[in-house]
Image (tube, rainbow, N blue to C red; front, side, top):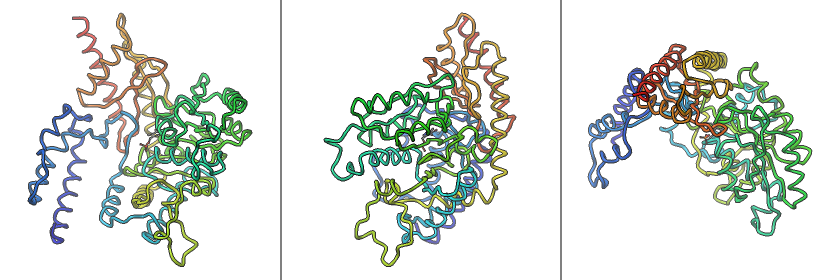
Length: 473
Ligand SMILES: *Cc1c(COP(=O)(O)O)cnc(C)c1O
């Protein structure tokens, strides 16, 4: 592209973006395409000659938007929202244009120093004590991998990174079954092995049972294993379960285990002081992951890992070859030494834009609204014919089943879910809870309004009625 064309096309892309956002309500939330349909629209081989931008842009408009599930749609109630406040999109554009590798202070001083300050702002916003530092990663999965590697190495006295794990005691890590699957992945990547991630039973509130944890650690010690750490869940992905943070950290401390808290989704809600009871005692953790790219509104990707002391993690992951030394500088931070990839994007910029353009009070209000509307929706759904709540609201997430008389609840619920997503006015997804197929309902889209939540309840009523009539024919 010629430099003089850049502005014209950037302007065109921005105009497209504004129109897309303005007309999102008219689109089905979940993509209505069949597998392979989009691939079939692309030539099999790459072009040898340049294609003009008009054609490229026209093909984008023709092929892509209808082939996407619209995550910024106000009636997106599936998974967890991946909010992108428009102001954070603007910052992302600027980041894309500068296209810097923010691996070292020297390669991106502003990115490094704004990152330090944004982590510090977010620490204050979440009510974490001074002393917590941190780094912005691409995902909570990465933060979980870093934390698991660090707990492994700390337990092994940093011999693993040097001589490997053959001949070492077998490391074990503890978590509840409500912990996200990325922790299982982290355990695999860390070479600990799935069977050594001990899934400690939960109590009646789906929180890790800290007495059971104590017994598991003691039994493992006696059997010759090396207990290394605990991953705590605050706002689990399935039903929003949270562990008893203070109590569990106490048990971990008795046994000198490293503690990582995964609050990828729920962390954003901790900007509201009245909700912080959910992770009471969290200041005792070694590491905390939370995704501003979920509920808070920072365009994906933006995941903060807070560290009570960065030293163990930097000791585990920091490699400093000659060609990456910064000559003549000692008082600097090179964030690539804190994380897995070398190259890093300037992720702090969108957080800076977001926090300033909205201010914390506006962001808190959105989260409070989402929770209030989720509670309202849960109450309304519980009253619909044939519906029952399977779990109450955990922040803004609840689950339900559709079990009309004489029908199998799992079958009917699955049929309803398919009907909902084929209909397209709203988008919901499922989980398996206590062996039952249940529908998750999460209110968290950045610009969601109360009326959108009420529409969702109407859609459920209408479609349940339709499939019930269907099943009686
Ligand atoms: C979403 C989520 C993750 C994974 O987040 P990524 O940033 O997509 O890797 C991990 N843990 C919890 C609790 C989550 O909700």
